[in-house]
Length: 250
Image (cartoon, rainbow, N blue to C red; front, side, top):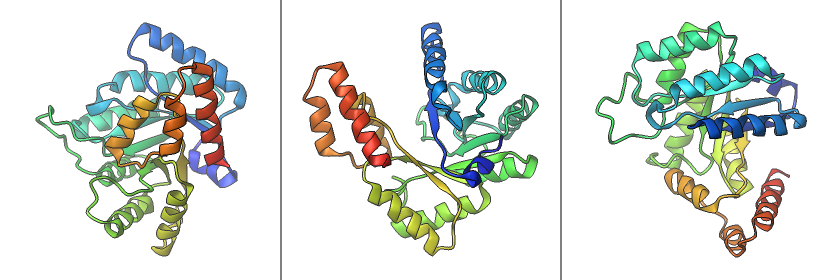
């Protein structure tokens, strides 16, 4: 099932998973997928480690989910540290196993990687996939603009250009719905109406989410952080985080 077709049919519920890095983590992932399957997600995605460090694990989990579950699984794929031949081989593997969707990302710069690879921007990766396949392609979007953008106007022009050759976008997480609404309006003003899904993260682990926010230039909700950090009770923290995420979705 192509995600673009799902989006054309109406609102969707999707989930994002991280690839496991140990047998124990793999068992937890399987248990998590089993637990969440009852909510009938329209699709799921599997993230990609920095510099492609989980390339094989992401690949294997996506292929397994597509084969065993009723919902499609979409792999994240990044430019950093990959040759064109490596990307083409991975794409061919996905197609051979019936994967129909991919999320094409630039990836975070890795100072310890001497060779940045054959692709510099996500747009280069999108164009490579588009030239070789008929896969459904998603791209990333930053409601508060990409942290390496020189201006808001340039960020929106670049995003509109990327979305013009993609099928849909998914945002980095955010905590103020007005940032998402403003991004959609600014894209529309540029003539871009490609659907961009809002990314929402429950702050069940404030330390980890804060680290991600610092990397991506995301403004955190100070009041939410204060409430989450004020309790040592795991269940109470979970309730606060889930309630805030649901409120944002509403």
